[in-house]
Image (cartoon, rainbow, N blue to C red; front, side):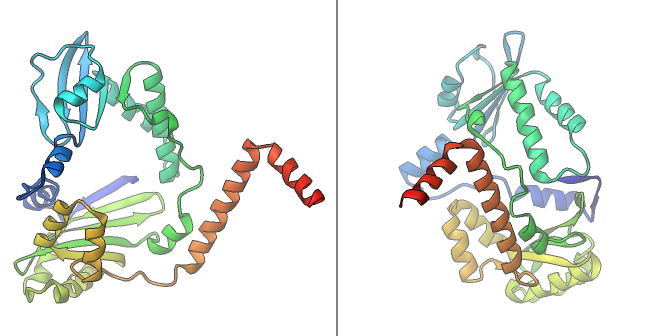
Length: 304
């Protein structure tokens, strides 16, 4: 999560436009009928209503949808089928602001990510119970978040406070865009764009396999120590977006179409510590839920 005094630095209007353009959907050529069908039922639908009327409909992939002819209430499954969505969230006008207000009132600066996520889930459940929010399909009741931070020791080793995650894309021999996230104890404290780095990277070779080293050195000199970095070319990134497959990303890593700088130090100790914490937590949870398990095990040891 972000700290209360998070700062945005090194961004121009063009830089914001380039960063946001990375997440715009791109047309695909030669796709199969099955792929077209999956795209036809992808993304989600957000419906805002009040006073028995639909006020706004927004599809996460298609954008805003005209609400003419829509009536309320309407079963969410029907809306999903009509607009090609995998899920639907309906909310009364002003309910999303209620989520933000309640989350802001309950969160504390010292809360970690897992604590804030649990509180957000509690708020959503409260609003669902009050009929203010409705979700289809509703899997919220089956969702349980851990009470221990996930891989806390490993995360601290990979991304310690005072360090940055640095991601950069190159295009035609120049730095197309980059983003650096600096972490402090309370969360992300700085989100830094590429504007300050460009003067240092005006003479690049055009081969990002060599140029990424200059970008990494410039980031460490000007922004701070980099915990780990990720580098690629814009065309490669676009191609991986169209693949929509983890296997494609793994292949790109294997052939160095995507370069990830190695983390500093060994992760064996923090991984072992996290495994021990989660094993203990799982055993404790199992013992609390199944009180008879201990009796069964003791009888088995006595009679075997």
